[in-house]
Image (cartoon, rainbow, N blue to C red; front, side, top):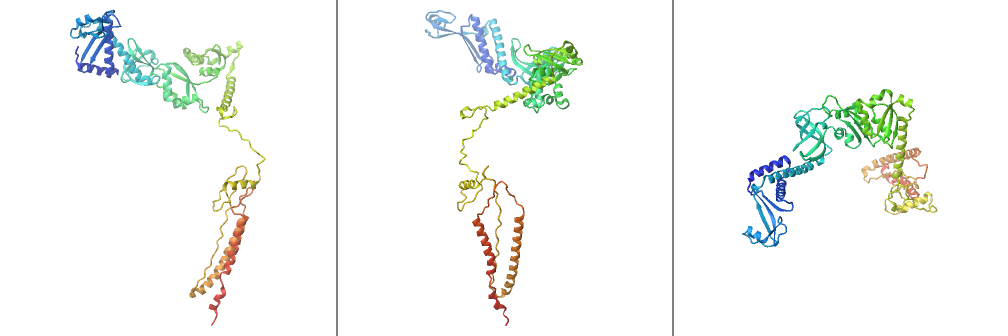
Length: 553
């Protein structure tokens, strides 16, 4: 059978654009559907059927295949050699060959065509589901944005891009209404398939996941994990309760979610429907103590005390006489949400009735004290667990921190606290006595006190040079005398300054002696050199040899 190639290509392109199913997938589904329908018409699924679909030439061929045998046992699958040669005289058949019986597509019965059509719908639904799941598998439990295409009392059709989703009335927030063209947010619950509607994306605005996604999107502390949402109980359009927790003791989880003057939580409330009444959200702090947790869940009611039965998951709550209506809530919504949030069956009684019946219960203060004790125990257990040795192969006893190194045995008899002995050990390490090497200081902890160098000023010498020219002799004698007096004056002034400097209090170390950078022998040599320079200043000049220039004629 020949078909119009351009028309079939146009149809395949339209399917690929609208459904996202590739041409190859459509052709494969068509071949499988035709083969399955023809097998059914032959009376058995065991029949061998081959379908050829050539998209380039536009030819579709379908045939039944039988095995050529000498003796036929199953006429649905086999044909004798004689019958094969008689029906097809263009070829000489022998046992083991395949005999193909062609079928004209346009002569197929109506029942086969209807079967092919139904099978194609089923194949398309499966392929569409796979495409949608592949596209939206990463968006399950997240928010998506769509535009309203159609709206009525039963629900709304929302366009989300390449496909549309249906939002039923029960998944809307109470009495909210939409107009065609409105942009709304949807929560993706799952990607499912139905017998009639085929593959579709399950969306909602009334589930707890929608509120959780809005809180995560609008409150940064929840988004980055500083605050964790432990549980949510919701009646869409009426009231919701959200239990939050933070492992950081410096963070108030409830206050951080509410924000200054309720600014953060109001952003979330403004997105919960456009009905006449806004949904109220109670943010409570999650408590590990079940009694305190139930008390928090019943807010805004003031709970006086509570008696919890952990085994039966029930609790008796005592509230102030004027707080009973708050604890129950309008149409019982507050109590229902508290039960749903905590998982406990809650029986509420007023304080006066509890006193008359002599009921025993624990107050908020008592439960808070118990919680503080349990928290302190957990902290101590955590610290103790942190000290447990992780690697036993290193030979450290259990209970010591990781990386602990046991002290090694030491021979204290050979140790000495003598300061000179310690200095000798430092000198051996640093080789302080080696000639022509830079002397380095080494800080010896707990043995040698810190030693600081004292700066010793270098001795400056003044050299007096004599002139040999005759015309400057007189001037040289006069200058030499002045220089001698000036030098002596400077030297005496310098010695006075040094004496005053020595008298000034310096930095001393009461807990140990100081070390000089010069030895005693070097200090003596410096002092002798200074004395020699002073003597040479007077001996270098022989004033008698100049007397002849001053003799009077």
